[in-house]
Image (tube, rainbow, N blue to C red; front, side):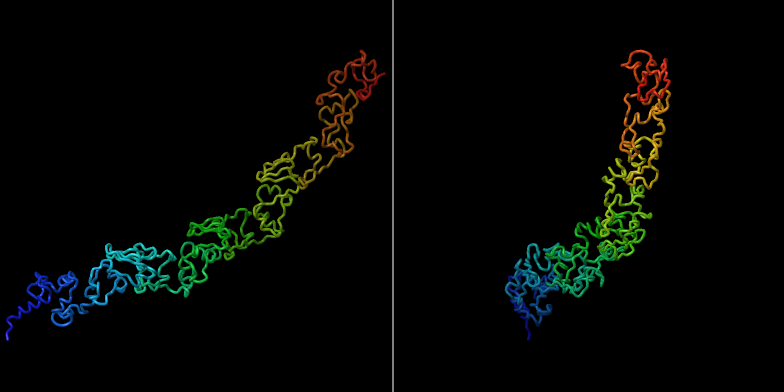
Length: 597
């Protein structure tokens, strides 16, 4: 049997099956469908433009069997998501490990209401992980940006609103690296199951999964985060110098940091309201006024008044205190400090910079250890006072307070009176009216620096006449005097000064005794003898330096005296003077009597 009308019948069926004739007009070609109909740009574009009227296809095509069955190309079935979304484009590839429901409402079937419609912003409906930790995400179809998602808008994110077709994001785009409340260190220290030391994600399933995957800190020692293995010491900054100082014992972590009671103590790993919990908080061991600011320590017991910067190069002795420190006596440190060795070296590092001041070799009878024996001769004028006991000028230290004796502030207490102000003595029993300068020995150069030469109210003459020479008895608080046995020991017999010789040896009158002009003391030590001017006993006032017999008799009295009658002196005083006016009996002239006949 022949079927001449079969082609026409099939053509009619094709027209019925593929839609209204008006819709397919122009698409038909030599086959049942236009050329290229099997491609996505053919039937796929046609279906998309008409909101996917698949029931029209089913009129002619079986979804699963027969010629032109959908499963012939779409092996998973036309209702499977991958039929349309196998290569969805945009950032879908970067999100393939996440369930579609995280960002979309997944329909129950292909024909579920609203599934095949273009819903703009409504196409993205966040659920699950996107809402973790209280996030309230949203999607802007105009810009293609997601905002406030738990996966992209972490603390410190540099790209908190990524756009759908932007390049792949980096670690810092979604959260700070590290986040603000994290210790500044490698991520793998705490998140080693997720990321490696280089910052690469090694287990994507644990990343951006709504859970912070951190290792159990309680199972590790301090070195796991701060150092290496069992060693808790960091290698940053000046930590190595504090871990094993060359000249001191290691500095315990608690000296500069507040140590947490447990690894999970507030503020230890993640910063919270606990102030500076993981930062520098100097303990009392560092000093009551110790402080750390701007990378520098100040007023610490370990570094003294200096302000070392964290991370600077190693410091030497004078980096913490002067050598010797201010207010210290000069000399080798080992003389008083058992931790030191000669030549400014540290002999016992474990006792150095330990919060204690180790002082040894001090005792009430050990003054020579510091002050003499060539070790540390005191400065200033001490050498000139070497024969005097220290107690003449200083108060001896209290044996119970020997350390206070070394504070550089000697206690001055002048035993012989007077005062000491800064560098000068005044009104002292040893320097009398002088004011010698302690730092200038020339201010006591010569006897006159302390007393006059001779002292006021002293008779003139060589000091040795009354004061024997001898350093042991000079300035010993007493005036040593050895007085001569007679007057001539000091004055001469007769004295040679002035007109004394003219009074003692003359042919004009009898020798004049000392008591004629002076009050002669009963003893050498009599008051007024050595400490006051001579007592004048004569009545006229001759010129002492001249010769009282020079010239005529009128040098001593009138010729004749005012109450005498005129005439020759010999007329009445012939036993004393001749008619020519020459003294013929000196013993009767100027003898205290008026001799006349």
